Image 1 (cartoon, one colour):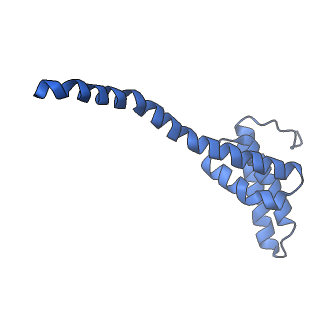
Image 2 (spheres, rainbow, N blue to C red):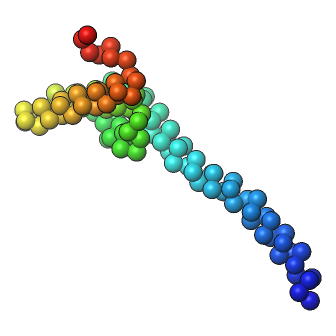
Image 3 (cartoon, helix red, strand yellow):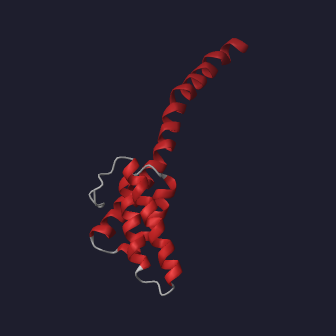
Length: 118
């Protein structure tokens, strides 16, 4: 009786072993796809000059991937644009200092320093 169940059980076990890695890979790609969608949307907003609208997306992108030098530069630019809208000078200066720090991080990651005087 036990031997009759063994082939079916072996088939199910083999199926699980074969399918599990694909399922895990698909789940791992989901965050990457979400990141790519958000990055594309933020890039479009920045290209249209809508820096303040892109700011929350760029904050998310940099938080989830601090190695994305393009997102760092775009966030820095958006922060400078945001600082220009602030009435509180102290808050505006904090935004500009943060933007400078982001640009320095981006430069360390390999972004060309064309934004800086040499």
